[in-house]
Length: 98
Image (tube, rainbow, N blue to C red; front, side):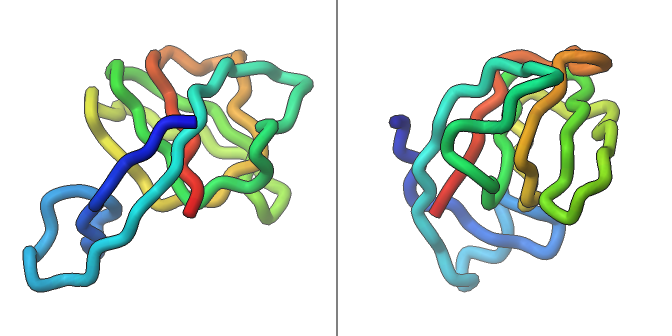
């Protein structure tokens, strides 16, 4: 398991928000996108993308979403149960848990 610490929380997701904002630590698991397999760590707290592209994911609430135009190094606060291989072009995807 990878460990990411500390991460600043901002209204736009994880990243370089206001330094006075609360910080939190995340554990991370590398993701292999698969259309038929849930993430082994369960529902995520967020996703980190280290290679630019799109991520097709199954949301914790039951729907799916294709997150398009993600930048390398972008992190998102999003609860997902699966990262689908179909339509996912981003690389180096890490599931974040706290």
